[in-house]
Image 1 (cartoon, rainbow, N blue to C red):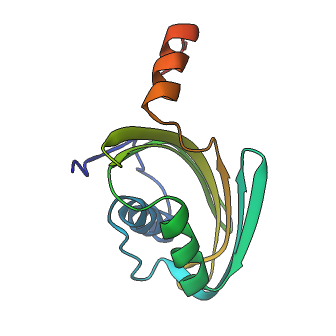
Image 2: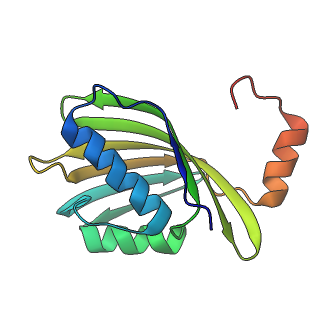
Amino acid sequence: MNTTTAITTTAGLPTSVDESIDRLVAFLQTGATDGLFAPDVFADITLPHWRVQALGADELIAMKTRMHPPGGRTRVEKVLPASHGYTLKVEERWEDGGQPWYCREAFLCDLDELGRIIEFSVYCTGDWDEAAVADHAKTVTLIRP
């Protein structure tokens, strides 16, 4: 599976933010979690018509893996650094069950003093299967794909 990443420039970002982004993208693409989450991370995940929460790195990793297994390709579209962390906007594409999938997500990440994510808010479009992607392409012309 292709796990290449297209990342917009992160020049000038604080080192802790840049390193956390690298770890978050690695998590999305491969499931690697080393140094990404604080043990007591709180996660608030908003999906279309649903919202779930997790407390603790193990619970968050298990939840995310059940909902959307790692793998595929992540394209970072935008990074907005903040004094306590960053916001990251991404597009993900992967294969599961023999078909391609797609989603867009925004992650609001608060970091602790070690650069680990301590608060993790996710806003996701939901996972679009091949039919949804095709229907969207026929119906909508995006100005900025």
